[in-house]
Image (cartoon, rainbow, N blue to C red; front, side, top):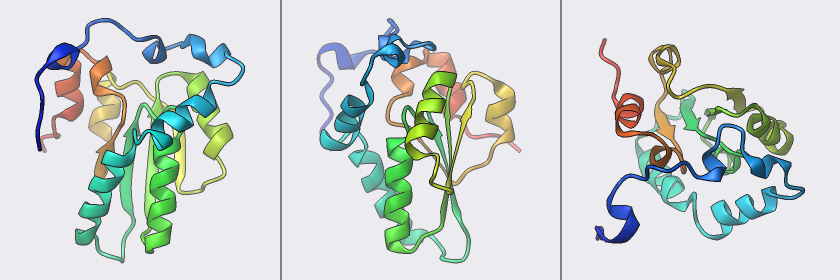
Length: 162
């Protein structure tokens, strides 16, 4: 894999993007959601994660559900695509999809709340009780690490010590 260390991608972002605001202005827009569906699906925003999951699934046993935590789920496209793919392949998956913004979680429930394998909830990634109390086979996100400072990103990614 070739990684270019050029331009704005060579360092962590320091400014909060409007879409990452805990109470995003775009919730008030009349039709923001089709754009995010296009961004995630049409432009391949979720493809990298789904390709990884497809490769990882070769080690899954068929007798137990595979659990996922999706951080900053947005409207839930990644979780829904994951469940659709897993069902087509005969896998039993459960996805716990979280976002810090209650309005975003409600949007996700409106779009994909009818999929029983997905649970949407409001959770804060900086809450150590949440991070330490959960166990999942996979933690996924298409848009979270760039919004965290380095210390918070390390805390989210660091595996628990037992």
